[in-house]
Length: 373
View 1: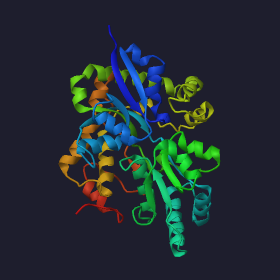
View 2: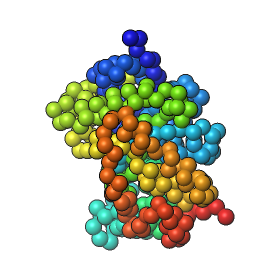
View 3: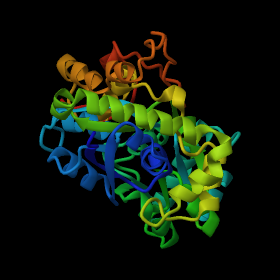
């Protein structure tokens, strides 16, 4: 039987491990798939090439899949997510100088995000009083969990992320260079780029993304909805191949081999020992038990878009956002019984409970927000 050709885009991040390993270890080939992987630098490139059909599938920021489906700041292209590739794999890293300033301003345990958020507010106020430039933070894309994690953390301490600091977009591979050059004072990104900055002595990890909000899917396997309808069996085979790869990556016995595979110049392109540390530290965010998409997490992501003025709230848009995460496609592909209906509640460091059925009430609790009129 002739193998089905597929082109899949990815960004050099450890949470692309399932996509890469599925190809390198033959799991995709075993499903009758001939996959070509295309390494990209920016999420905009991945999104655009997926939207116009140059990619059949992609490792994609989960909020981008929702934004594309809703037509937010881009052409409306309905996408679906059949598999989570990463949950809680990011971290907030700051320069040594800012780390010291936050530690000195902290009143309480600095491992507590609320303590550091309030300390950041004091640092910001002191810089303003001294006539200094605002702090600058890098995030990977406006529609990203990294953006929302930074904003949630800052706002929880009283820092307005649109008024008190600067947020700018940097591709993940440029984050470590950005903090080394002083272009940014901190950033939120996935592995291995936090570890790269730490190893270079130019960054200090302040918090894991899961300290800010947990659980939330950061990356998904995304395909165009129309493509999924036309090629259901191909999608199912791809999901199964990635599922096998995810299990392979999760096995500690394979970490040296996986690290070597990911370190290749046309994959992630950093030292295998550094990638191994990310895998050992759980900084990759991949977990087989978290692979099944959860529409409640899509609702949380949509709520952040509304909070920060990227979208207006309507029940129809909420239903559309939830529909991007497709557990039914995952279940059909894996032939596994549907997961229990009870899923972990989304918990954030600010203590504000999230109810996907009451988003307007949830948003009303935040004094810092950009709700459209």
